Image 1 (cartoon, rainbow, N blue to C red):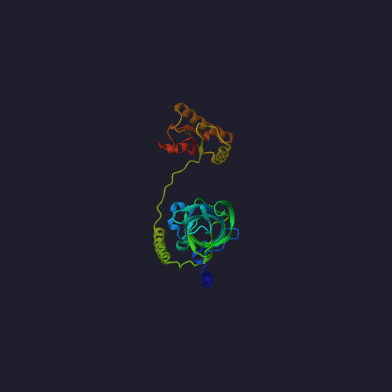
Image 2 (image 1 turned 120 degrees about the vertical axis):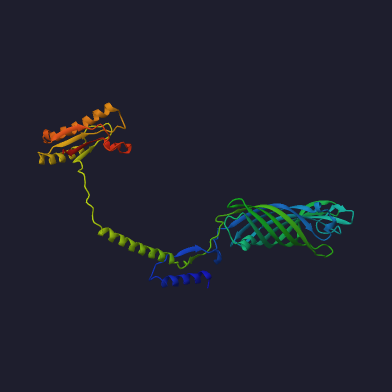
Length: 400
């Protein structure tokens, strides 16, 4: 049974056992330790194009200059990754091989390149189709991580080559022809891949190839070795990242000691408050003398003396009180703040406001003899400017 299945069953049993006490929310996370899911078939495909050079190490090649044995090579591959570690590629490879032979009838000998040491130079063009199994060493050793810049990829595989070479009539070249012989090769290498973007990589491919040499007229077959280096570009198709299986996570048992300590402290505090409340309720109540407040106060905006509809409704109610007490006299005081405007404007506002209130009360049926209109040239609430909006008013008070 998979680890993810065992863990899921364990979480279900644990959560079911405590359901009578609490419903703990389940948490689901991706767990790379459980492996990686296979992507859809169309994802994780790639195309590689590369070019470089190779040097052949066959029998007696050491007598030929190293630089003279250097030859071009190129490849084109199509592949797919089945997991972050395992993939494959298949494609075509072309390379030229340059070596030497110990007699003029050997395969690929160039008669016009005879060596005075008794050896003949050889040159063969190899065209092959091959297949490689690929292993991402970086993901294997360090774990898969999206967005990694470098990947080291090991591969092994095989290639079947068809050959072209010059044909001679014994002395002169008759042009190139497809050789009747074929070559089977085994190859292995390391790709050093550097991500340029999510879909494009630049890489250096270092490759070793073992070639089964062609049979010559002496019936001798030997294996040759070839070392090649390529610079290539990889284009990755569709989705390039991998997802891990989603598994449930059992939350660890919560340590409730801190909550218990808070509860104890809260209970102690409640006891203290109950005691303080009992002491407070048992104290004698001091007699508080309350000054009579104005019967009503009309507040005005700055530089305004007319009454609003709301003010008139208030004064209508005030008039009913006054008419119910015809022997009671009332003092109307007009106010204006001294923080804005000037004395001339403020004097006008005070008089206009108090006279407007008096006229409206008389209009509502209050006897003019009950009303004593006056003004106060100070600030109603003192010298603090933060109260100046309350200084723009008319107060209505019972006369002493």
